[in-house]
Length: 392
Image (cartoon, rainbow, N blue to C red; front, top):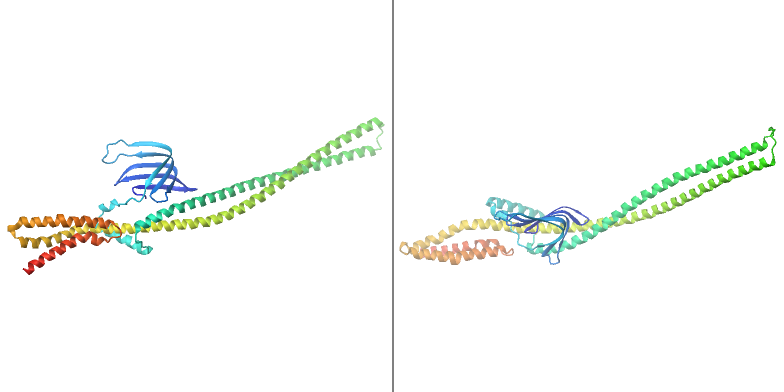
């Protein structure tokens, strides 16, 4: 709430405000609206201006009750807006509230302040100083959130890489088993071919005449088959070695990613602790502002209550002045008494009332002497006049 502006934010992601709505008020009417998908809010070092950087939004200037202007609309991709702070906040709803409601509301605020046990000698200055401290805390919080987000992203990426490497290891081991089966099958083929060759050589029951040429052909065929199978075995062994090398690389990568996760986890723990401290500090500052605003509201409620009561009791003080004036001047001097009354009202009562209301706006000045000073003056004048009458 930056009077006369009100800012609404749906949520915050990585220090970026999402779905922002800014309303500008003039008395009880909205004179302009800003809507944006995201943006940032910063307060300058002096605490006098809030800088709004809004992205992907639109502005609306609706027609007010007494205005004949056509509502205006427009859109923007990125824009910066300045909101002046330190403006006097006036609760316009108080002027429509009944005296009973004002008293009840003041009692509620008073009870809340008693529970919180906070009192500020100058709430206005407290709010001003605290508003300067909040941007620094928000900036630190934003940096912490970025660091936290970076660590969380690193853990997420490391876990994804570990899962990927584990999948590679699983596939590589499956392939190694298949390649091993290929080697076993190839060796079985070599054993089978060798056994067949031996059986042919030892088969003495055959009566076919074996020439040297046939024997050489069989020998060449055997060697060719054996050599081909051995090449297959060597190829599968190379593939097994390649898969084992990939397993070692994947396991090494898993180890490195695990170290990254451990390091990021430590960073997250430290950052979480710092974030909680900053959130606690931000909450303390917010509560301080809330307490100071409640204290200001209590004074404003008290001021409005006395403003309602003081004019009513002023009638009695005017009676105290009017009765002795009427007795002293008699009917023959009616114009004199009327002139004296107007002099008292115009040159004493109303200046005292105006001065008292101005002083009452100052939070360091007591309310009762400020608002009731004019009535006290009338009361004293009335007593003096009555005393003169009784003395005569």
